[in-house]
Image 1 (cartoon, rainbow, N blue to C red):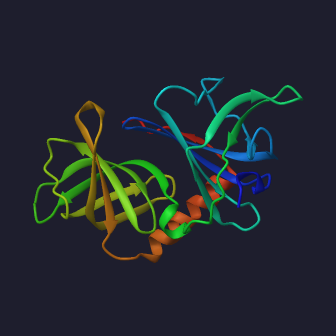
Image 2 (image 1 turned 90 degrees about the vertical axis):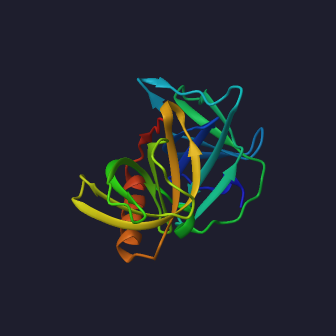
Image 3 (image 1 turned 180 degrees about the vertical axis):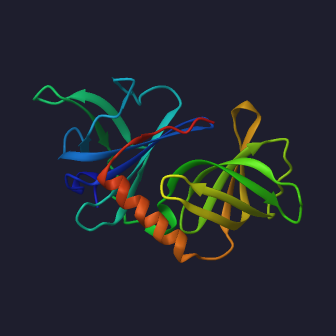
Length: 222
């Protein structure tokens, strides 16, 4: 499957990575092209009424696209993203990728960006700390807290947070498997859910459908 096999209407999740900082954007495929290489034109990604540029030293991009007909996600790494004008004078972004890829596992790949305030308890500690819950998938969750908070690899974390948009409250236990140092003295912890949850699976699927209908731009500041 090449990137220009994605039909118009397919949902695009584009990530731009600069050092330890990741910016996440949602858009939608408008047209497929095959020159100068396989690619798609997508609805322009804007900020403050200006089109965003994705070219520069140290910037790498990857794109996950959900095929509008198959409803299956495909991911291309190290894509080239160019801002441009089409023949009719409208702005868009072109995403190019030469690689042929296979479908990815939606359950393990698709992550819902949250950015919600939450509280966490590490292991058997009684102390509760304030965290920012970054994102969630059917198999994992991540959160941000100050580096001074002691969180060991393999520790069990108990997270409590709410989605104010639909009133759902979450109480989740997860195993810490990854740490990433961020700016401003913070750290990002990636966790594996201790068990599967139909509630989380339904929530992720619901958010995925909502995002497909109403593409938005989401920026994660680290």
